Amino acid sequence: MSIEEAVIESLKDLPADAKRRVLDFAETVRRENHLPVRPRNNPQGLWADLGGDITEEDIAEARREMWGNFPRDIEL
Image 1: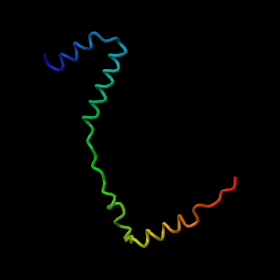
Image 2 (image 1 turned 90 degrees about the vertical axis):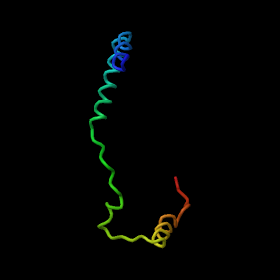
Image 3 (image 1 turned 180 degrees about the vertical axis):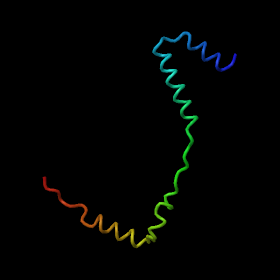
């Protein structure tokens, strides 16, 4: 028995709402197999034209600026 025949045999015993779910699933799988997979862009290419060279000192300075007054008292 082929896979197609086994699926059809299994469908015969299912109620109508379950058959609808199986059909929806089959259509989803069909769409997934026909859509081309787009390659992901390299993030370095997105920023290549900005010409920024970030050093360890730049990162340390940004951290000091962000966390400089932490923790502070919050008045409610």
